[in-house]
Length: 173
Image (cartoon, rainbow, N blue to C red):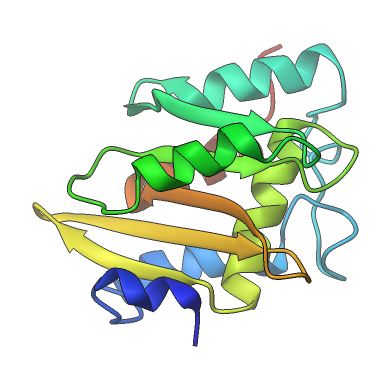
């Protein structure tokens, strides 16, 4: 069992089976992280090539019409102090405000790390789905092999589904 079950969140696996399956299929099996799955469909395949396209992708993911994730914080793994403060500040989830706090897990970009963490959380069962004010919220955690927390991510199901459409839609021409 994941360590996140200590947060007293609803442990029902999913609210909407079809949405849950779409999320698992994309983030776990078809993950855009090429080293994570034999079935991976990479960012590059969708047209999101490193450099300015990744900057466009980050802006599009975090500031699109359906959401604006204000609480975003990514830190290099060597600097744990600031992220530990963020983890402590969000020890009790009392709203449907989305946040992404995590360490870069590879030498790639913040976006690659974010998707790797979501994929790993799904693969290792370190996630919980919860209803909050009629919204379905996904809470992901990720830990290093040494047991250090690498991430806390709390996203609306609608955001996860919208991100799938953004990635598959490719960059603007």
